[in-house]
Amino acid sequence: MERADAARNRRAILRATEELLSTHDLADVSMDRVAAAAGVGKGTVFHRFGNREGLMRALVESRVEELSVALTSGPPPLGPGAPPASRLAAFFDAVVELASRNVKVMAAFEQASTDRLNSPVYRSWHAHVSGLIASASPSLDADLVAHLLLGSLHSDLMLRFLKTGETDRLATGLRSMVTTLLR
Image (cartoon, one colour):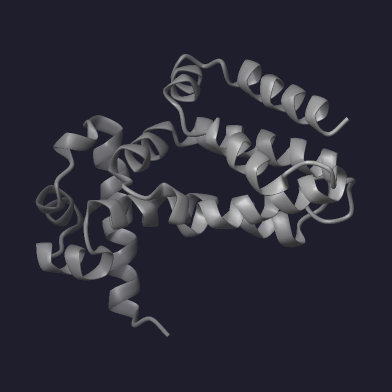
């Protein structure tokens, strides 16, 4: 169980980081600056998150928490009960929507991340996507195809579409890929 002051500090640090990212490039968001904006000591930030990558990972994880719950216990088509292809399309729609609301946070995580494939979010999403692919089309290499589909989310091209407001085009393209793949 997290102490009340530790939880409060965590929330303050994450909020300060997000606020700084909304007005600064990642290179200008130092741990010192985050600590000062959050009203905590620099040591508290390092103790809590380890480094900038850990801080960005925690910020992303706080953003995807609602989506994670929807995947496991939400209503169809995102949650259980819909056909795998419908769930997969709904997942990519939800990820694009989430990313469009958090462009700076996602971009900062991408820049700070040294091992994105081992992040808890990626591993969870990969397990979800590969499981749906295996259910929908057992002849496909679900593990590899899941990596390829998720890899398309981690690209400069996707970031450009998000920054220019072409989220509908992006979501439609991903949905089309999923539909064609699982036909």
